[in-house]
Image (cartoon, rainbow, N blue to C red; front, side):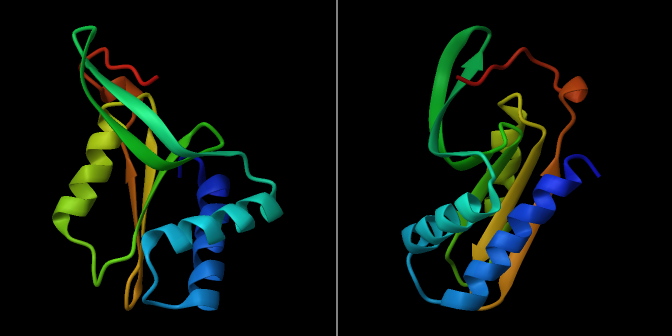
Length: 131
């Protein structure tokens, strides 16, 4: 699996935070707790990372990723009852519109949920950049 060692560490952070805080907090609370755990594990990350989406060298949109971990993995966190296809599609769009190939969608819902998406850069059809 691509970047398995890093994704395993991120998932450990997720479960540590979930098992400590449980369900019911706002997303920002989980985000801040994950920062504490990322620091303890020595993981490099960028929080609230701005990403520009390009189409034929023109900026057509922008968004903010919750985390970019080790400059390789996009991490999106949610604190909702359960994940939907729309949430998964959002993560897939983030991956396909950047040079990142792996994404994790982590939900601090009633039941912890993890979705992993991979999209190899060689399969991306357009020259789309992230800044």
